[in-house]
Length: 195
Image 1 (cartoon, rainbow, N blue to C red):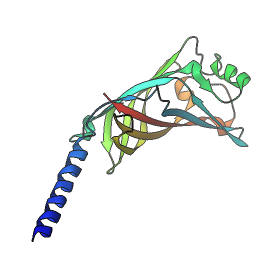
Image 2 (cartoon, rainbow, N blue to C red; image 1 turned 45 degrees about the vertical axis):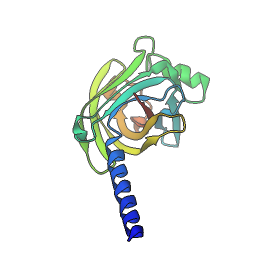
Image 3 (cartoon, helix red, strand yellow; image 1 turned 90 degrees about the horizontal axis):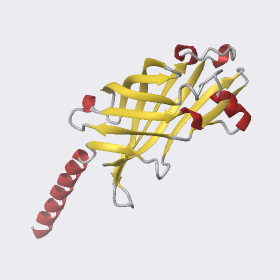
Image 4 (cartoon, one colour; image 1 turned 90 degrees about the vertical axis):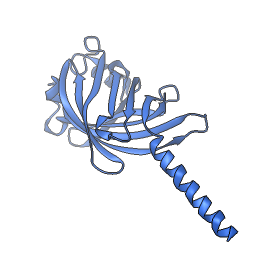
């Protein structure tokens, strides 16, 4: 009987802890810029012959999770466009020029969510206003929560990954790169530290 009571008590405690853990993710998270657990990457075809990969090294943002009403969650981010890095200095200089990002005129790109639709237990469509090259357009990110919990550094963290595809001409980047290079895929992976 004592063993049964002990097992029942352990099961009840585990259930209580799991329900507490479910509520725990709610809150605002700061991108972990200091620890560099964050990436904004891009992928674009080069003439239809190969893929060019790159990233932006300098960006920051926050996301707020409303566990009870996920549609009330929100995301904001700012990218320093001059931090573009395609692993080739001359190409990066070209990407920063007025042929592409025109970083002197448009030093930042920003995203601010306007709606969130939960599509599964750990997936969502995040729609927001994305400003790039001086043009603001609505874009939708396909997002997935990777995980959350306490870290070895005595803080609480959550990781998200999201992606979207943009048409360069929609943002005023009209340099002719050929039909295979009209769109660019953006992949965002961030780990946030709970404030």
